[in-house]
Length: 567
Image (cartoon, rainbow, N blue to C red; front, side, top):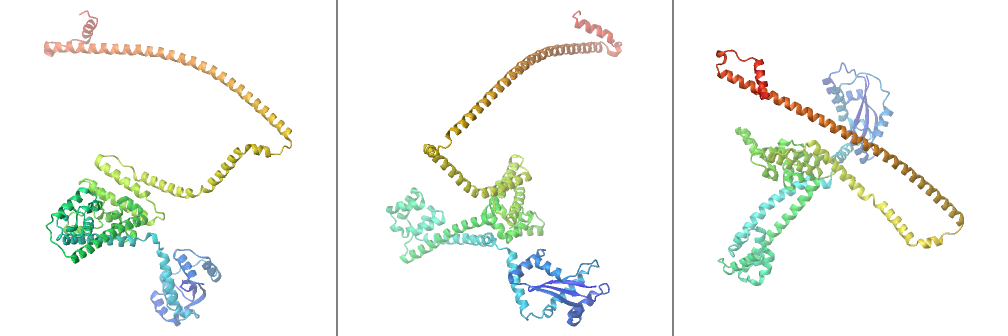
């Protein structure tokens, strides 16, 4: 039995032939022992053909196609040239084939004589780097690592700016303690500390500038009055310079924090637009950073995403057998705060479900759009109304169909925005030519040659006569149709009148029948009432002990007398 083996390397394709082996009688352990020995292995396995790659780019393309299960033209031609015709036979054992390929990998350099000792390692290293780089499919605009770094830096900046602002307040309060009570904002306090500098120099001349900083004239006057009657101690010029420099640093940090926040919003709209439109940029960035990447967040189920950030509470609850947490980082979303205390857990579960859908759409879709995030947000709003007011929300299938249609319409609109530019130019040219012709109509008529003028006039007159005949024929046909329609209308009117009369007669007959029925019902009711009265009288007179009850015939006679007013 002959066995052919295809071995792909970083340098090229190689085809080996294993002959003289009876697979049924072979043992895997015996094959492993023979693989390590080149003399025994070389007698069994021989190199049939070798196709080297032309360049590093060719090697990358070939290996990419092999990894994706695609046969290239070069590989097909190589196998067709060197393989014999296929015959039906026994299939080789996988373990047996793996052991032979392991031996080929071990002794490959000795099979190829032209290879130098270090060439194969260099080719493997270069191809490995290029292959991994191509597999990553690097996109500069969709790097979620920048979002992770930005949100971490934003958190640290918040802590640092707050601590530095408190230090500015404490330092400058030795000189002007009343200012801390008037101004509560840290950034504005640092601005005022830099502007005022020495409180003794603050006067009403600086009142307009103070109002520009504070935005309130009353507060500016209050600061000026407090500076006049301040109880703080005086500081040396060097101390005031240091306070000013430190206040400027705090202002720079807070401004940089604002710019970083804007940068984070733009990056989130590029990387995860649906997640950002659903839950917000800050909460979405925290979820991505906690999961490690957008891909990891997309792989998480909604139950994991719901408690993401509350791992300590979860394991504490599992250890103490208490209640597990209902929400983690998604608690910072506005939807959880708007829900009632009874429905916070339900809302967290539903919101985590929608966040997992949005993150998967952002991760695996090629075109970035916010349509799905907006629709998911509408669903969450509807669920809030359902919990509060009982309004039934829409079905998820209908909402997603609407979102898909809107996304497709947006794509088509983007494509058609650029297309009608050329035909519009053509239309404008035609309009211009028509307007020019209308303006210069007399000149155009004069410029035309007067050749065969009489013949053209005769042809026009004949055409006009034909048109007049057609018009007359159409008018006559219209009159005939109108006459016939009038006759039909009169007949229809007479038939309608007859129908109305018959309906009126039928209505009168029906009314008479209903009156008769009512009279019969009334007589029956009166008879039943008389029967009941006689029965009650008989019961009061002794009932069954006094004698038998009156017969129905007597009751009927009495009731008839009552009905005819004889009694």
